[in-house]
Length: 412
Image (cartoon, rainbow, N blue to C red; front, side):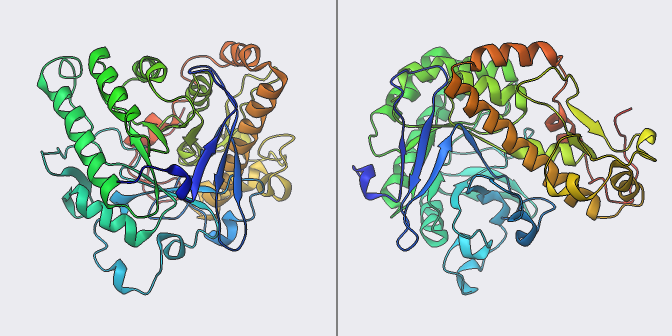
């Protein structure tokens, strides 16, 4: 088992000594030829499906300025790809054409909150397009060495059952014990990738403390992950607050599935360094353009490009936006594309929504620099009423994208 993070390609630096509360930091990844790659935090991982950003081919994705060079890929997308090692690719980065991005390999898609597969003592159960697959931790370690990501999130025995098993009985204690054993298998088998470990324990304070204590004892970990996506947002924040004081404050904190602006902002306020960008994808799936801001007086969270009022509106998707979609196309044009089920509609919307999401995190870091984040966040929560950012819940129930010809229910 490795004992020194310094030997890895990845490490996290922060001057913040506080165990909770917002903080800034820097992710540094060593590159052999290009030099070190740095990402300022708080920030986000670019969300992908099957290694690609939804609706964006790599050539288009690279035109979106200032996106953080960090991409997350979930292993469940590749469980049915049984011959990756025979295709001549040297790494997951090369296979998915991710360039010099920091590649983070996770196990599960954070947008999927309802799952049927169950784990057992020696394997993690995962729903896949080919049925339920069994992910054995030692085999996962071998796959990590083959795919060669910069960072890997350890597999864990996530609990998807409803109450009361979330707080009592043996189910949670088993999940904590299994997750630690699987983590040790991964640490023993992975050659180069930095390892992030999920903090377990669900809604049990005692078991969350036990999980945090076990993780803190494993000094080679590069950071911690909070992945209880099946819990309600308020419960997820409670679990985060329970665990953070018991973990090493110098290590990276990543909260999966916390990408909605209100949830991401609350996560940052509690000391989280990274979320993912799946919210931008969820907004695109509604046929909407993001319009929320951390600062200012606006109360509009998004622009509905399906609305009939867009038919003859030749202004940009969002006034003042500098993204490529807003600079060259109008609301009326995207409205037309949506109604004619043209794929270009979601390409333009995804480009805008990712650009806007990046701008939101720029505002967060600027507020941190100015010492005004708490004040700006309070004003943000006053301006945007509860329910303003439920696109992830909507996309979890959708069966098709806006550009398909299958009619689906849309926002009224």
